[in-house]
Image (cartoon, rainbow, N blue to C red; front, side, top):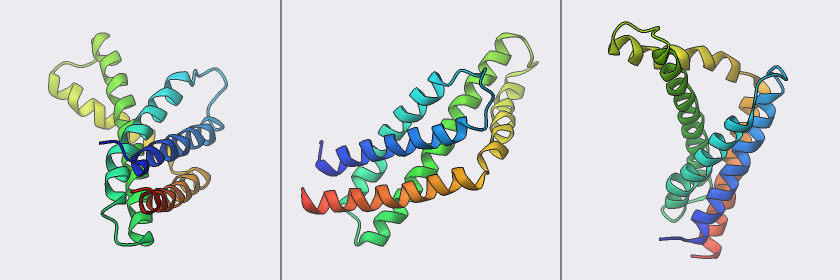
Length: 148
């Protein structure tokens, strides 16, 4: 059932996702298209904000617990987006015949995910994600208390 906390969480984590993609995009070459990255990240941010943080806002026993749930939600967004793009890359490679068995393709998802992770371990991006999770968690908690 829609609540104000779920709506605020969806919007807040969509905004955190968009800002994180913008920070991440500064390290990429200008030739790489970013539309899909923005769309997928924002969609996952809305979904995770609504389902994870929005539902936890009314169960939180305080602002600190809500902020911790916000950081957990942000981590879930990052892992989900990395796995989505790793799966897409694996499917692209599988269609080109680069894998001999289905197990090779399955393991290729995790190889691609591990290849993407070092580019995410930048201090500015980690700071944006942590701060965004903390602030979004606090805002969602406040909205859940203000508009039950």
